[in-house]
Length: 187
Image (tube, rainbow, N blue to C red; front, side, top):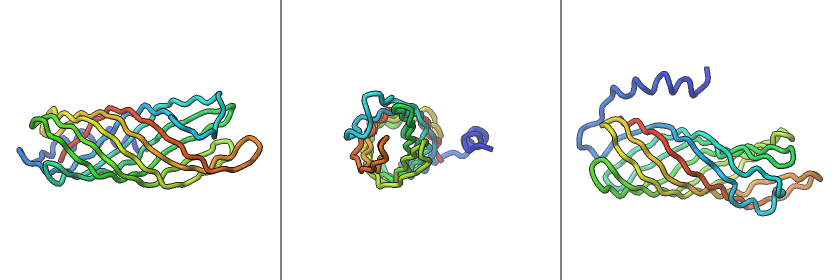
């Protein structure tokens, strides 16, 4: 069974768990649909690079009070193609969350954090693990006591080791931009 099948089966049952009405503290989990772009490659790839992709993020977190929280996520950051080469980017991150409530059902947020990123060279069948940093901003609308819609943008920075067509390996500073929309289930 694939992990996303489990989300589809288990997700709706979690809607039965209601958070305390009026509480600023709650846990949540959910998923986001991502549109990614390799915005900066530091000369690692040629002009033939397909630098946009789509991905999925699974997130979970805890809202400690009206202003602060923490969120962890496992996300794909895109599959990029360059002259027959394919590179898959993904990350496991932990971020601090700062909330700016506008009303009881709508708020803005900012986040900053980091974690570990993976770059998989599909042709060489190599995986390169490196630290990754991230910042982002977004907005969230609570449509019910247990469901919130969210969307925003993130920026990721990573310095993976890239092997060129001649077999030379170099560390390159890269930036990935992400736009997303998603759902969060509150408990």
